[in-house]
Image 1 (tube, helix red, strand yellow):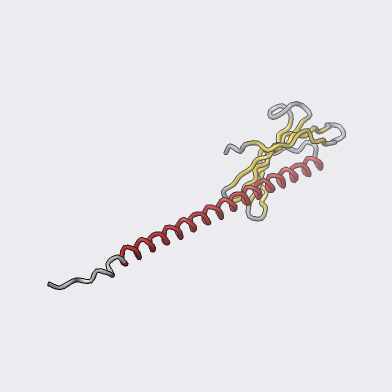
Image 2: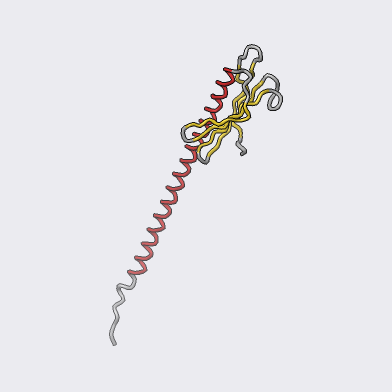
Length: 140
């Protein structure tokens, strides 16, 4: 009867377990870095959308300063890689008499932010005063 050497048989499971563990560690590291990059991108796009909404608000303020009767049911303002949808409403339908409401929605790829601005506009002199500027939840 011959003796069979079995000293190399234990090496195969050790190599398989070790390589499996290394593959799992690499997959977890890649998934973590992917999620981190995507969250940073989302934050940047959200900030860009807020700045686009602010640009839309500023544009409407300039138009109201030039023409105290300016209103708009909605116009687009193209800005770099996004846009702002601006709505200007005056008096009764949107707010009280002598006030103008500006809604500006900034869009940057998949992110949107909305700002609401209330102005007090003197109908005689055309003087505009800011009453409030706030971010509101965007509901498409």
